[in-house]
Image (cartoon, rainbow, N blue to C red; front, side, top):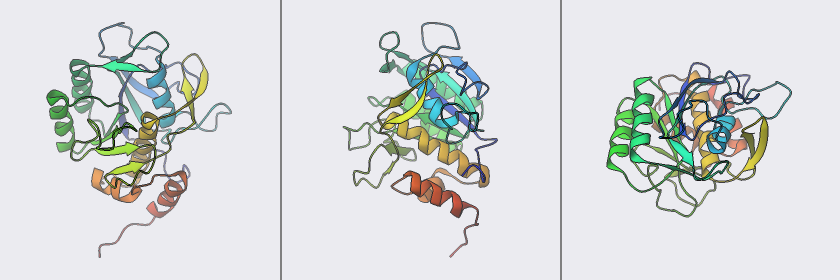
Length: 249
């Protein structure tokens, strides 16, 4: 795929926990970092969840170590809107205020894609900002928790690309790899991750690859191209097909 497209010039806002910007497979990939969470105030926090999501998206290819991200030349804007339940833990918490601050910044900075590897109760403020992003043509990709077949929030907002880790027959979702995903974790390390949180950046990364080739494409175009099953084989097939312009029928 990367012979054709790498996501160059596409800005992806990752709204998550902090990202270890000094990880050797991520160094130079994070173009902007901001902490909207209450504590601590350091903008370059090395949290597990956000670092793992960023690795799936943009880890350096062909550097002789680790992994290669789906869209390695995309511009990653890392917003720490969530914080671990306890130090060095994968599970994390966010709140309406921190998510709203991050979403507002992602919109102001003209992101092309927003990756939300998170879910929770419905929130009017967060929904309003996501709908504002959608109205500006920003592609929003969000995780569907495996136990929630209805879509979860914010993945259930109309216009958001909902991503699950398995094909459960729900044609409103895209299924993408989310089991035993090797990715970056803090302190120059790697680990295997499971869940729709890590399926989501596969789809956000594919969206970036598509946007490099077709800058005018909208979320509906991306979803139609990837279909209901964003497996590795299908992604490769999609990449090959993308080199040929679609024709009107």
